Image (cartoon, rainbow, N blue to C red; front, side, top):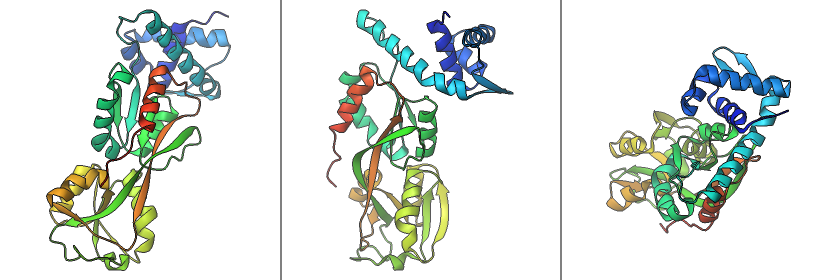
Length: 296
């Protein structure tokens, strides 16, 4: 059996894209060359690695067994190339994911502080927690910084920083300034919320909704900026991260209501449990673990 790195690279790229066209585009090869390379790999292994469900190629059991080993081998090969070619462009960039609060309000500062440790600028994906966990599970990301719970059995979630969720309202709201606000007084409020499966929506459903005998859903929006602007315009109140809303609180554009209890929120570092940790990934994890959130 004579497997080649090119065959494994083609396999790993097809596994991430789920089709020949996307893999061919990334690898700058023809679809025919990609298909031929995959066929030769499957011939040598004497087993198909994908189920052909037109127009997609879906990893089967054997393919899922091979994927982490192939990804690790390719990452190690990139590190070897860099070790002996110090003046060359980095052969692989760290693929980072971040949920919206972290990606918009924390990640830029992290990347600025970790530029020396990372070397090449990473490729960053900002999406909700559910989508990021899906990408991690399919080796489309190396690491994700998430604010929601990970429900995928193949992922590792490491507690990272502790944020706080706040109930926010327009500055003229009648409950603004009331101390030790009973949550029952919020039962008739209209809520502006993030979309289902986002970290912020999950926090609302877990921490706040059980305390409301009734509640009224207003707008459902898929960005934090849209949620906060809707609250500013008097379209409802919301439940949002202190990280995201701190500037608006300091400027007086929004106010935080003061309920009788606080709502802490854990942020997490997440990766696939079979993911090989490259030198760049190890350095970035070390950097992240040394961070703390600014005081309110």
